Every structure is written in structure tokens, then in C-alpha cells.
Image (cartoon, rainbow, N blue to C red; front, top):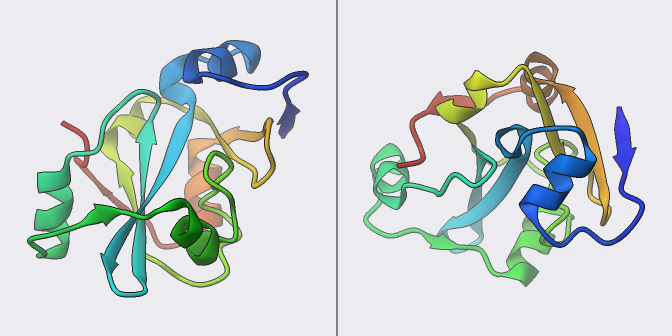
Length: 138
């Protein structure tokens, strides 16, 4: 279902509270650069951080960097802060941290500021298609 915030969202805690969720139910979609013009996305729960060593090991690369805002928009079609793992213009590897498995209901970005999509974890993974689940946060 679509959830529209009534005002500007300024924190993860605010977003979760207004949606009637815990912070761990809010999915952050983080885009990073694998190489020139190559990107991947990691989905993490709430305030969880990315484990860069785990990502480097997963992709067999010694160096990964966060995509800058222009790269995020080009790779996903979404602005930073609105990124959704659904509706991407082209395929990219999508990784989901095992921390997401603790929640049945999640919320994701919709591509529009102050609007989220609330759905069941199983439905999210079906909508994404190919997703690799692993331990990608410390």
C-alpha cells in the first residue's frame, strides 16, 4: 500500500513512527559503484550500516565506493532519498541483508519524496525478482 507523509520527513525514526513501524522495518536502498558505469544495490534494515568488507568479498573486488547523487539518479531513475529497488530502468545486482528477514512487513522508497510503499517482505522479494540474501551489515 502507498503511504503519504503529511509533511517533510527528516529522519529514519520519524519515517518509521509516522508509518506505524519500527525503524528496522524501513528499508534503505543503498547504491554503490562496482566499476565504471556498473552499479549494485544493497537493501538494509533501518539504521543498519553496510559492511564494506562483506560487499567487497561478495563481489571479489578490492574497492567499492558509494554512488554519488548523479550516478544514483542515472542508475536507478530515482533521486537520493527516494530510491526504490522496484522499477529500475536496467538490471543491477540487488543484495538484501539478512537483517530484513526479521520483519514480515517492510517499507521502501517509492521514487517520490515523502511517499513510501508498505508491503510484505515476501511480496518485495517477488517484485524485485533476483535478489541475493546475505550478511551485508556488521
